[in-house]
Amino acid sequence: MHVALTGATGFLGLRLLRRLLGTHPTVTVLAHAGSDDALHRITRYFELTGSPEAFIAELPRRLRVVDTDLGQPRLGLSGRAFQELADGLGTIWHSAGSINLEGDLPELRHINVEGTRHVLELAAAGHRTPLLRHVSTAFVAGSRRDGVAYEDELDDACGFENAYERSKYEAELLVHAWSRKHGRPALVLRPSILVTDLPPHPELPSHPLLVIERILRDARCAAELAEPAEPREPAESARPAQPAGPGDPGPGGRPLVRTVGHPRGRLNLLQVDHAAEVMVRLAGLTPSGGVDTYHVVHDRDVPVPTVVTLLERLVPLSIDLVAAKPETPSALEALLDFYPGMTAYLAHRRRFDDTRVRTRLGPTAASAPVSLDYLWSGLAPRGRPLAPAPGTAPAVLPSARYA
Ligand SMILES: NC(=O)c1ccc[n+]([C@@H]2O[C@H](COP(=O)([O-])OP(=O)(O)OC[C@H]3O[C@@H](n4cnc5c(N)ncnc54)[C@H](OP(=O)(O)O)[C@@H]3O)[C@@H](O)[C@H]2O)c1
Image (tube, rainbow, N blue to C red):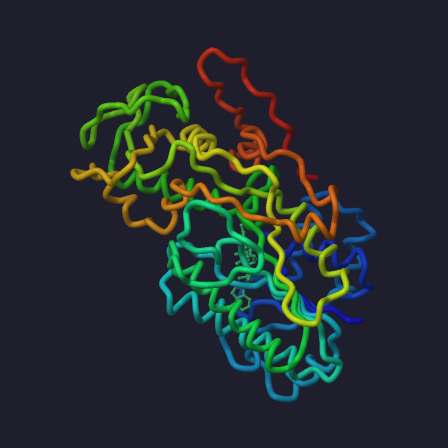
């Protein structure tokens, strides 16, 4: 059955596309109208990640690119083009969206909620009743910071850390309402934070931690703080609180940032290629008939202090996790306070239950550990060695793997 994919040029979408091309002779790419040439970007991804030349040469024939705008009724297509598109589809993967953690609610609703509504209308219009695969996020669990988030939960009882989470929650509600109204099955896939060890490249979409790194770097520049002399010892969960006043430099002369976080906090980070593989395998299971929701997550969380260490190695800052917001923030801390939707995650300790995934896919659903070296490789500019913690040997970096 013919398959269509929204968001095929995205960080996750490119990996989903790679998988879908493994099992489908052709794929319809519902590209972002007005954005850069989708076929060119997709081709560059496959070139840069070393796909065989014969495979790449076939892409123009195997990909049918249709320009669409998620935010517009009928995805911006004429009534006729919309119906023809719908009638030709057996499966729709909806991965497009805005992952702007600091975006405002109207903007995020426009893309993530209205966009999902329009994709659902496409799925409803198709006379072959296409199957729907909706990419959500584990973070629809919202602001609940402790305990366990289960796959069958979907409520707003704890509120949300940011408008992105709320918009994805509202989009999932639409999927449930659509499934009930039309008596159709739907697959909801909830990945956690997706990461890669592929070094950043200007022609590839970046992953969410890179956005955090840029924000820290920009804030540091904006606060006109001095460059560091030496790297400092990385944060540790047991590190005693360091007395510091607003604007004080941290160890090694690095500007100190006190940010609310939990020393035993943890974040779920999953390799994006593994996530795409698991998602496509889940899509191959027999649907229940209603909405089947899966947490596509790592079985081991990454401790927040590891993430802090990573950020400290990327940006010349010294980050201290504190229990409450400083009463007299430095200029840099005040700047970073504009990003509460992002820094909130440093205080998270909850776990995502993925019993359904493990039950259905077995032990092969588990992925390799996400280590500090792995994360560094996917964030550091190409060829930049991992700064060793004092007294340790430099880490050996995987070589940059661009063809
Ligand atoms: N990345 C993560 O860590 C993560 C974690 C959990 C869940 N998710 C979910 O996974 C999905 C994919 O995320 P991603 O990381 O691949 O995001 P991404 O790299 O930002 O890609 C977003 C995709 O959506 C397309 N798009 C944006 N606005 C559009 C519009 N108005 N009309 C049509 N297409 C539009 C983009 O096209 P252009 O590139 O042409 O603009 C791009 O292909 C999202 O639903 C996200 O919520 C992501």
